[in-house]
Image 1 (spheres, rainbow, N blue to C red):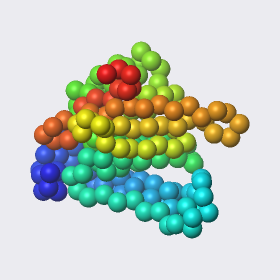
Image 2 (image 1 turned 135 degrees about the vertical axis):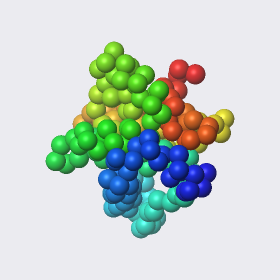
Image 3 (image 1 turned 180 degrees about the vertical axis):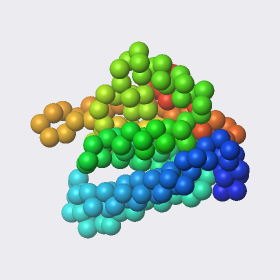
Length: 174
């Protein structure tokens, strides 16, 4: 998908928040890259000396989902308190409208954040392609410190034409 296609499909549907969202997503991605670049290495001395970077390009679905989750988690876990306005803008931009409506119903029923499928924010996450090549797998790790780490894997399904998030479900649901 070219960047021109991306702009044209969004025009009219969500233009009111486009400028602020572009800035917010850019800041979220750069904050994520900065956080990853400054995070301490977990394993070897060789890993501790390597500089980290985050790559992506327009239309690449793994990068798109990673950008969404990175910015969304940053908004939910802001040091000054959760930024509900930014989280809502990210949802409006990335989620298909029909899925956003279903997600609200799921959240009321489960009393949890539907994007994260949790009541709290993960301490780290990984976004990767699924084995079937059609979906994206998001792995969240919760906990840390004295608490044991709990891992959840989610499958993120994208609409084939526009690339909006069409579904988020636990991997065991399939």
